[in-house]
Length: 436
Ligand code: PMP
Image (cartoon, rainbow, N blue to C red; front, side, top):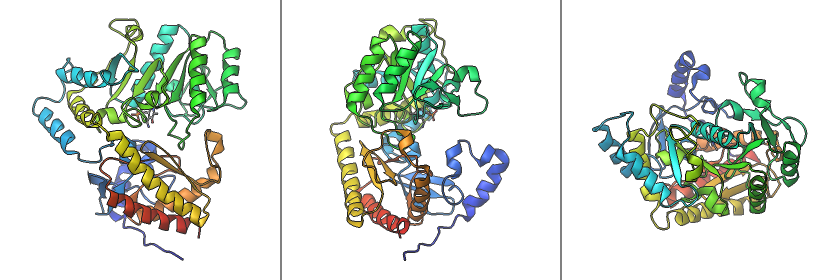
């Protein structure tokens, strides 16, 4: 029977005890509290390339990558230098800068799915603003979202599925007025029937349907391309805007994200994470005709003291300049594919009840025998116990995965073949422990 020694978490535990006096649950964002896995959260001191080090001096190969932004790994030379150079010129002006133009040009000249963009400071803000734009443009109030998609923590979107095929959502957070939840309809992913029914039940009432490019916040729920095209067709037919939330998939699945992956033109696209190179940036983009509805040109109000912040723009430019280099994404995908295939072979050889799903440089372990999972309710919550065991066994071998089985893993360009080989060996041992 394989046994691993638990890593020391003494200093992290001390820091966490202090943090509990300062922040609710000791954290500034809930999943960081390690509630779904074993032990106290690790307090991270620094990162370099694919590695991070915690307060106790433990070293890990990192597959959380700050929940997605770090497609180039930690402490990337170009990003660090661009940020450092900007620090000497000023941190914030609240006035337009050349850097905003540069980042916009870089994006708009290479992403054929949007013609104009607005920078904000987080993914939540980007999505909240996109919803307001859709409502302002269509003069309709209702929106449709999917069970299992996360779009940040704004009121309209903290809504979970009610019972039945097509129902008004129920709030998934205290503090969200019922009246808000009543404007959000939640349906299942990859279900054409539900989609048709929603438009039959609420004709001329739905401002927008919002979907994650590829849902990656509740496991990795890869949708059929045909379904996404059907969704596009149906929304257009009903004068409803289609919003692709590409906060994770944007600049991850390719420079044109999930829109480019499916070859589908959404009406509005939201971005976050990678677009800021690790700094707080979000954005939403659409056609010029639609973006004219945003203030000061139009009547849909949206603003931000730190929007287009020069330091964040400098980081974003440096990151995206690397991503537009030839073969960046092909290489990322090939590396990920090799990693995934090697682990899959081991799983098959051992007959373990676990699947490894992947798209681009994203992967997700699902403890199931189902060969495909496309909907949130296809996931058995009991399978998360296995993830907990795997997570602990990986940490004990110097591999850092996200602290919840519903979270996906990310491979960055800083992960070397040797990092991945080390990880494959550790994953094999972790799976042996889960299934022993
Ligand atoms: N949309 C998606 C698809 C996300 O994954 C996230 C964050 N994980 C958000 C929106 C919210 O972004 P932020 O955390 O930057 O507010």
